[in-house]
Image 1 (tube, rainbow over the protein chains, first blue to last red):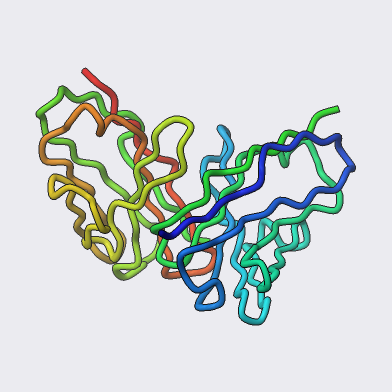
Image 2 (cartoon, helix red, strand yellow; image 1 turned 90 degrees about the horizontal axis):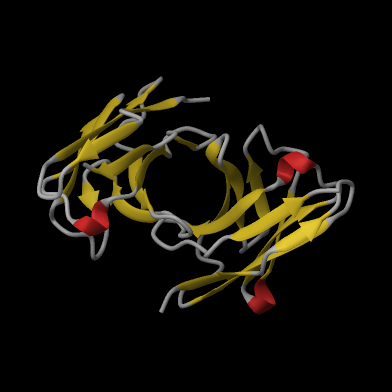
Length: 114
Length: 107
């Protein structure tokens, strides 16, 4: 069974760092890419970018370039989304999705507030 | 960046009726378009890929059409479980982009 299981909800203060995860099972983690999508009430769904776990090559959407970092650990079939300096505007639900768009993680709510 | 425009923003329909949702791309995206359904508290669910191919397990009442810049999702006879928000997304150009959604609500 294909699954993408994301880490739980997080609450941070502005300026703090954060790393959330997406562990996959039921398919080859290194066979293609894993994407990240942000959802907010104001802007809706936004494509953040993708990572190729086979070689950790990344491609970021221009709006997110330099703002976040994707990484992957092939030994545990897990992709990561990381911030070094969070802002209130990063408050959103974040989803991971596999190539083919057919399986999504359940979403991770990130709340950034002082 | 390609802008995806969905219309209408809200569609009010009675169960059993037909619903037609539109998605327009600001540039040609060939047939590289997917449709999703999203219900509150859930991740998007893939309905259609390649503009017109139903994803596994999607009922036949859902159909997609179009290519280039104009796309349509049709739900032939709305069931109670179909009331949700529907999004289109193009994957022909980088960055991939989503529409802002059409909410299908019960009349």
